[in-house]
Length: 582
Ligand code: ATP
Image 1 (tube, rainbow, N blue to C red):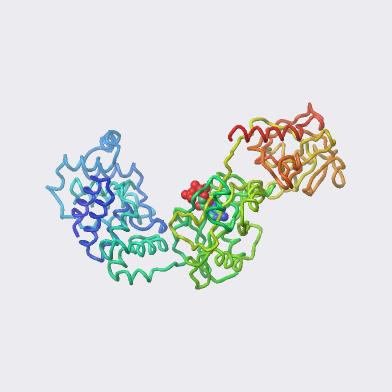
Image 2 (tube, rainbow, N blue to C red):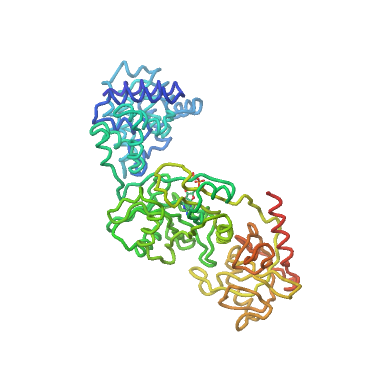
């Protein structure tokens, strides 16, 4: 097939925003393409060469593209760059240069889809010494033979900005219309959702029809498109919608789909990128935790504070993206835990059509939990009142809220639906002011903090009972000097066991007499069954805690322990933060 024919369709697609019209254009195109090339045409139309999870990248920086254009056209790199700045789109630059030069009329044989695709793949695959020149040569070769209009699209594919405005769902509609019927599009979509590869789906459908598609199944190593959730603002609405359902903690991390084969584990992101190299710690731990032969599991990778054991905000794990070099160091400093919540496939059994309860059973059967690989906390609940404490507990553990899941729902790959409903809190507040807290205990440090304390047990003061009540574990905000001077500084206050004026449900490794006061800033104040500050003032069984506490660097030597922030002050801060947002 001539590349020019494809380019004509692209131009028409660009000229419309109507989905039906796009579908019709694509349907005609797909019916006209030789079967052997339909996959390639689908990828090119998506502006790519292979599905995302194959990780094939063009590897041509814009600077290099400018050089290639200069090289082919006899302009200077500066001139090409000037045009690029003016026009803002590399495709239009190439088109304009080639039309000025009338390149096409002087040289070249007509381009075919096959040649364009092959050259682009070779550009993407060239690596090692000399590869930059090789890439430039391959691109120049294509440009030599292309018309200005063809150059426009070749360049857009190369710089990753095809932007035809064609959604995957439109391609699916067109494939169904071309090789089955509109009504049967669900079969095409199913095959896409489990294979994440529209090119392959197109080839199989064109060759073998719907029957052929039925042969496309989940496969270990090939990511499945993620099931997504809807949201509701209140627990009442959640139960109205689902009735008795499973509630799970909603962890704030990075969604991971783990494909465990025989001896090989691959990790994919929600966007189906291969993340395997970024999480060596998860790979190791998962191979210890997994008891079966092969599986596709899903969970959330959440960063953990090694010293306090607290879940950290998501940003701490996002560092890992794209940072290949110091990954060992990063995974030591901020390890991640994997909280698993689904099992799509286990030892030869495809489970995505099976109900939630069965998938959860399979998950529980297949995992022997370790410190770093655990299962998402879950509770089967019938009505909102069963859920309230669980929700507060989730928040206290550093989660964003809950996800409610219909007990009988299959894993609806690639779909956003009401079988999973997220319920986040409707308030989100920042702690406006710092608090002054008293050190009453410490926890031994780990990793880099071995030999000193990893975290301190901090209390507020309750003047009515003359008690120091726990309000957080503090491990952040210390520079090295402050950290390593802690044991020395605290030595004279060491106690055998908990001080009689301390009220704490946590067992510290080392107890102290309440004496030293630190200034602390937190993200917010939350209800907590773990801490005893203002216990049961708001809710039965709960005290208040400071979330994500951080030492400001200021020792309040000017304050005695009984001058510290009181329980009542923290209680009123909690109430005012609710008012502020509500
Ligand atoms: P969405 O993924 O729905 O487009 P988003 O990326 O903004 O939206 P959220 O709305 O915060 O994410 O919530 C959905 C995400 O929550 C999931 O994609 C998953 O990564 C995460 N998650 C955390 N815990 C769970 C759980 N127990 N079950 C399912 N998903 C969970």
